[in-house]
Amino acid sequence: MKKRAVFLDRDGVINEVLSKRVKFVNKPEEFYFLPGVPEAIKKLNRHFDYVFVVTNQGGVGLGYLTEKDLRRIHDHMKRELKRKGAEIHDIACCIHPPHLGCECRKPGSKMIEDLAEKYGVDLSRSYMVGDQETDIAAGKRAGTKTVYIGAYSPSADASFPDLAAASDWMAAEAGKGKGEG
Image (cartoon, rainbow, N blue to C red; front, side):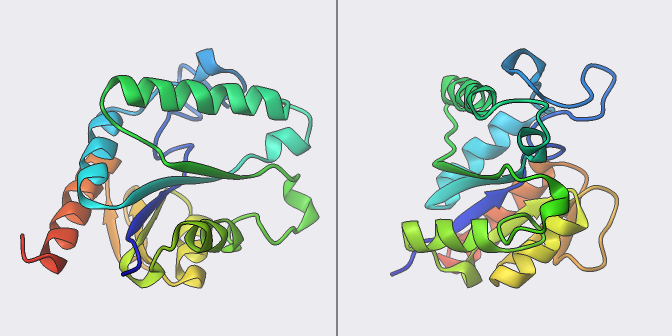
C-alpha cells in the first residue's frame, strides 16, 4: 500500500519570516521555529509515514545566500527538530530566481510529485500545508488535500491559524482512515 505524507512549506509555516526578529532566513542563527511547530511535526510523525518540506528559496538564485548556506539552515532545522523528537524525512527546494518560471517553483507541483514518486506516496491521502496561495495551488495540482495556515483561504480544504491546530485536525483525519477517530 502506498504511503501517506504531509508536505510542509517552510517560511511562515515552520519558521518565522517577516517578523520583528528576522526578515528572511539567510543563515542558521536567523531560523526561529514558530510556536508549537516541533510538537506539531512530532504529532504528524506519529500519524503519517512521512513529513516533507517543499520550499521556494529564490534567495539562492538571487544571490542572497548560497546553496551551502541553505543546507546549513536545513541541517540546523532538522537537528533541532530531532532534539525534540520530531523528524523531517526529506526537503525539496526550488532555488531558482522567481522570474525564471521554472517548473519546480510553487505553484508548480514538481517538488511534491518528485518526493511522492521517490517515497511511494499516495498523494490523494496526503496533505500540502502552506501560508501562501501558491502552496495551496501546488497541492491541488499534485492531487493532495490542502491546508492553509493563516486567516482563511477559500481555495484550501481547511484553514487554521498555525501548524499546531492544523496538525491536530490532520491527525484526527488520518485516524479516521485507520479506524482510530
